[in-house]
Length: 588
Ligand code: NOJ
Ligand code: NOJ
Image (cartoon, rainbow, N blue to C red; front, side, top):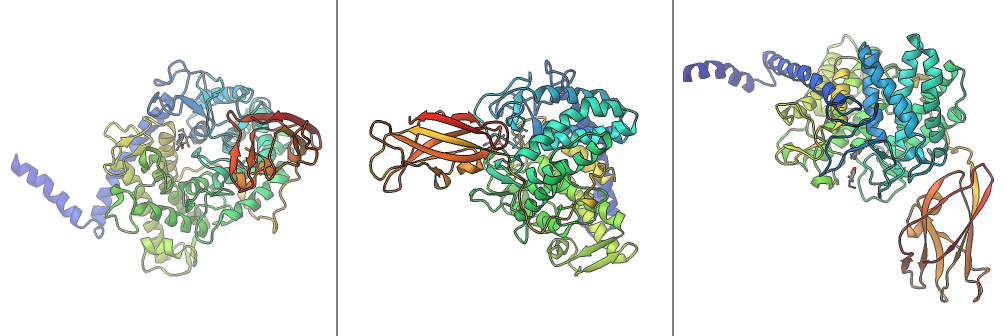
């Protein structure tokens, strides 16, 4: 017994010693990673399908095509369908369909039907034409969720449009042009109309916490608009405003670059560095297999996206116990952002997988282009994994090219190995793993975790999503002009008795109302104020046909801010550019 243990253990111990130097050891490590990927891929696909109605094993009673975020019904309660999670999940399923798994077609058709329905459900973010498509989540029975939440979240419509556009293009190529035009396009068209109308408005980020401008939302919006224009043309349909908005969105996207990384949330004072896996997820979502290493669209192999990869990864090196003692250049567990306190802040499976996916996608792009360029922006990224490298362009066939490619592949695999290490034996992927002991945490069987495993390992195998036409849509205009606004004039009348030195302001959910920030609230005028009619008023340009919440605030002579009592007020602006509306309120 002891002898056989020795016999079996000895070579393994030797292999461990030589883990970095010996090609044999490397091979052994790879083989086991390959095995893990093989079994975990099957588990992940099953994990995704289990959470989709009507027949998912963990989605009992859920309507067809509805994706449950996780079967967890408490601590946390994820028994809802999020537009974002569902769209990213279905993007992965459509990619598998394109790669040949036609057994998924019915499920995808169910998704189209379910989303067409949800687009018509009025909810706290608005009605079908007044902002309701920005609602982040619905009850699984497809009714509106009416509790308090970080809303709207404007990435949902863009992500859904992309998943459906990829599908529509596949249909066109596979004899389904009529279905693409009559059934899929109408859903895409509504989502793109939403993007055209609202992309320049602030909203909540993908983590549902920060109300500002999120890089992920903007990047996803750009991609969706560009491919939407191409699809509309193919189908002989109109995508009104899409072609005009797209370059403006790309222009705005440039303002998130700090010089060394993407600040994931701008137009908000959130007290964070902005290093957030938001940006890495943006890069993998907008990866175009035909693109060069374009900085402007933050392609996975671009110098900016690689520098950002390092900045984000490094921001997690020292803060998690599970990352302690792991050398620079080796993979670590990646969370959402370092200041995160949700469940005390931990690494997430989908975030760690995204870090791998970016690297595999970059490898695909270099291989296709036949060269790798290292410049001053990306040099620190490359130095971590290949200390001897210097600035230059390395052609395919050269030994330096081969060394870089292999170092990036090893680094990518290392992120998968981190996931492997913290995946329980049964392959169940929760949302997070504990920052200190690595055990699974928060929502169990998170659909998005499984989907992230599928896409990361597909990229590793060279399976990619179709082009979205990035090569002809990657040059931002020299100056951002915004989109021509479709505004309405809203007159705010509020009767509020004030004492000398006090002033009344309005603030709320819209950029034009200062986004709930008292400092940016809009002043009302007292020019019509009398003792018998204490009227304060303001005429403010607001986006047409938009639901928003607001409140009045009172600022005292010494600068103290007094808010009205709850609940927030709600109003829908008039429909149609240049129209007008009036609200008559009484201070409370
Ligand atoms: C629930 C959200 O889903 C999560 O992203 C967020 O961190 C927490 N609420 C705390 O705001
Ligand atoms: C919390 C995450 O922050 C958010 O992105 C996600 O949509 C929900 N959980 C549901 O998975």
